[in-house]
Image (tube, rainbow over all chains, first blue to last red; front, side, top):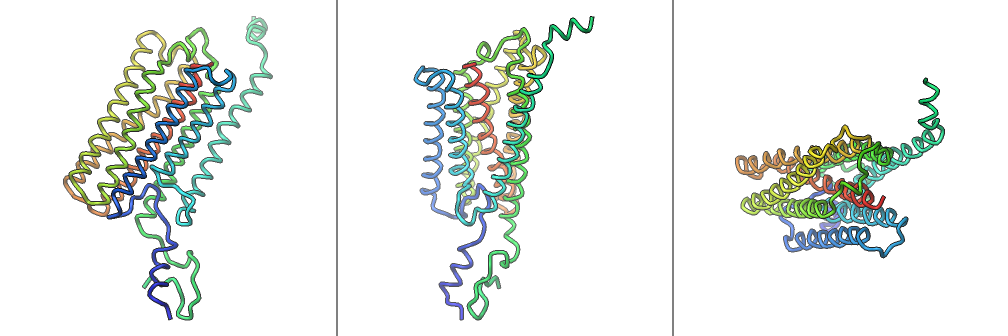
Length: 134
Length: 206
């Protein structure tokens, strides 16, 4: 025998969610509050990265690292508050696809930088190359 | 009947629930497309990162980047993304007036962003620092220009969505299209975060 409550929870409890989906006829105030919180956090992080560059609070060579960290944090804010990608069970498919995309992005970017740095290192200096071709 | 439990009380796993609803399949499919678009951008980012020091005799980034302009562009795109979220809430409420208002604001802010970017590019080319000047500028114009092209395509899509909501109302297939559009628009903002941080802000410190 399936109880009424059991049935309701299984129908609505463990289904999937589309990314970026806003619930049909959901609570508007809660929706707006979510987007507003995302907007405020994004503005704070953006302001922080512009401030890091224009002030001398952080040791010079460390600035790119600070900017990278702030950028990744802001992308996370956008994903959670604007695209509604969360760690909830109904979001597993979306998160797994995102994880795979992130893996490929890291492979492409760091792989390219690594290979090109080695190629640069092994290449003959340009003036020697020009002399040999004479 | 979409029962999740057998009559004897044994619960079925999620995979036995049958296919997901169309809305989830549409959203998920478009999410996969967006991730592949992000991978396309990652190759342009990689090219830029490799070539960013290859300035030939041309100007390096710190001489040509105007951070005030970049900050305004960032603000426009962020506010546009927020307005798109408001449109998404209005669509969920089936409110035609606020849907159109929010989409209009989204579009106007997107246009402002594009105008600022176009002005920056035109200024660079007028000074002779166009994409042919150095490898650095080639990769810069390709990366930022590709994002600009995406925003242009998004604006065309946005205009289509406004017209379709007006002409066809909140039909189910139109709402699926709008779900994809809002995903696209938010994803463009995420890519812009990477561009303003890694290209402009890191560029002025090099």
